[in-house]
Length: 181
Image (cartoon, rainbow, N blue to C red; front, side):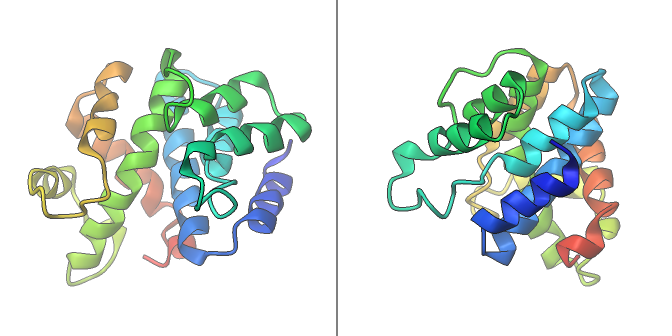
C-alpha cells in the first residue's frame, strides 16, 4: 500500500483531528527510527500511521483495539510485519524484534512531545530539546497518559534516552505544520 492510500484509509476510519495527528506523529517517529536502525522505512512508517485505525470503532471495547486494526489491514493486503507491529503496539502480541518494539515507544512518546511543546512559550516542537522532554518525563503528573514504561522500550532498540528523544523530536518537527505545532 502506498502512503497516500494509507492516509486516505486512516482518515476514513478516524474523524478526530487529534487522533489523526497522533498517527501522523507516530508515522514520522517510526520512519526516523527505521532509518536509524536499518529497518524498512516504508513498512515502519505505515505501521506508525495505521496503528490506531480502529481506535474510534473500539473505544467502548478497548479489549478489541488492535485486533480490529489487524483485520482491516489484512483485508487491505498489508504485510505481516506491519500487521504484527500494529498488534504489538498495545500488546495484543508480545513485541518481538526492532519494528515491534519501536512502535511501542514511538506510540507512547508522541503525547509526551506534544505536551512538552504546548507548555513552551513558543508552542513549537522545534523549540524542544531532548533534555527538556527528559526532565518533563520525570514529573509523574505531567502528561499522565504518556506511559513511561512504554517509552522506555527505546532501550530494546539499543538507543539511549537522549538518542531516542532527539530522533523523535526531530521527526515530529519535520511535520510540525501537519501537527499544528
